[in-house]
Amino acid sequence: MDKVHLDIFQPQQVKLQDDFDHVIVPGIEGDFGISIGHTPFITMLRPGVISAYKGDKVDNYAIHDGFVTVEDDKVVITCQTIEAAAEIDAQRAKKAKQRAEKRLQAPPDSSDIDFRRAELALKRSLVRLSLKES
Amino acid sequence: MANTRDIKNRIDSVKSTRQITNAMKMVAAAKLRRSQEKILAARPYADNINKMLRKLKLKNKFTEHQLLYPNQDAARNAFVFVTSDRGLCGGFNSMISKRALIYLEEHKNTDIICIGKKGYDYIRQHTNLEITEKYFNFFNEMDFSISKQIADDLLKKFLKGDYGKIDILYNEFKSAIQQNIITKQLLPIVPAENEEISTLDFIYEPDDNTIISELGEKYIEVEIWRIMLESSAAEQGARMTAMDSATDNADELVEELTLKYNQVRQSSITKEIIEISSGAEALK
Image (cartoon, rainbow over all chains, first blue to last red; front, side):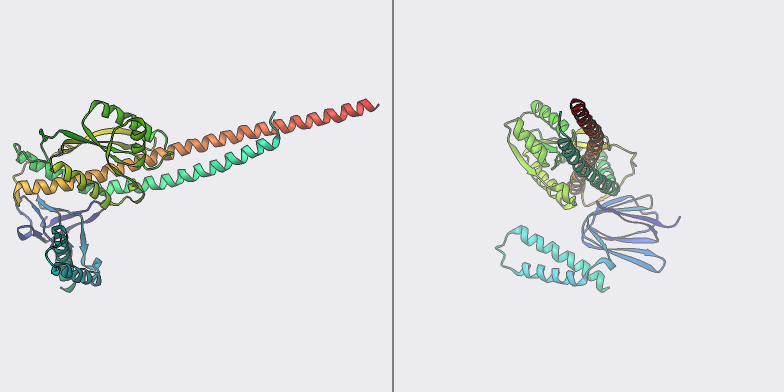
C-alpha cells in the first residue's frame, strides 16, 4: 500500500479515518510532510493548517493544539479542537480577530493571563481566516 | 375494616406513583444510552494519549518528571469522590459513600474534593471533616469543558506541590444492574498497560519533558472526563433498575389493593343482604 492512513481523534468523537497520499502537519518546530516510510515521530502541534492530499484533491483542517504520532505509515492526530474548512464561520473568526487585536492594544498593565488569552485567540482566528481565504 | 373509598384512594395514588417511576425509568434508559455513546466516542482519543505517554515513560525510565513520580515532600494527599447530584438511584450513592468513609478512616491528612452533591451531603452528615472543593451539576450537561476545568484545578494544585498523590473513587458502569466501585490513583500518572506498544525508537519534538507535561495534562483531562461518564452511566443504570423494580412493586400493590377492594365491597354487600333478609324475617 502506498498511502498513509490518517486518524483524527477528539475527546467527543472520531473526526476522520481515511487514507491519503500525503499529509502536511504544523508541528511545534515547523511544518512537516508525511508520506509513506516516514520515520517514527511524535510531536506537539502548533495552531495551523493540516492539509491531506489525495490525488489532486486536498482536505484542509484548522487545528489549534494537540499531538501527532507517526508510526508504520499511520498518522494519528489527537486534539481537542479541529475544524474542516467548511465548518468555519468566517464572520465569527473576523470578529474574534478584531476583539483580540483590541485587547492586545490595551495598556500593558492588564494581567498576563488576559494578554496570553488574547494572543491565543488572535492566533486561532488567523488560522481560521487563512484557511477560509485560501 | 377499611372502607371502600379509602382503598380506592390508595389505588389511585399508587397508580400515579407508578406512572412517575415508569417515566423516570424511560428517561434513565435514554440518558444511559447517551453516556455510553460518549464513552465509546472518547475511547480512541484516550487510548492514544495513554499509548504516547507509555512510550515516553518507557524511553525515560529514570525521569523524575513531577507528573509521573510521587512527590515525597508533600504533607497532604487529595481524594476525589464522585457521586451523583440526584437521588432515587438505588444503592448507587450509599454504597460508595460507605467506601469513602473507610478510605478516609485509613488515610488521614487528606483533602476531600467532591464531584456530585450526594457524596458531599453524606460526608457532611457523617463526619466533621472539611471539604476542600466541590463541583455540582456536571451530570446535567455532560460537557467536556467542565471536566477540563476540574482537571485544570487539580493539576494546578498538584504541580504546586500541595499533594503527594491524588486518588479518585467512583462507580464504574458494568451493566444496568451492576456497578463496580473503583479506587484509582489519578496523580502521579500511572498509564494503563492495556495493550502491546511498539518499542520503536521515536523522534520527539520538542524535548521529552515538555511533551510529558503537555501529554500529562491532556491525560488527566480525558481521564476525568472518562470517569465522570462512567459514573454517569452507572448512575443512570442504577436508576433504571431501581425505577423498574419500583414500577413492578407498584403493579403488585395495585393488584393486592384491588383484591382487597373487591373483598371489602363483597362483604359489605353480603352484610346488607343479611340485614335486609333478617329485617324481613323479623316482620313475619
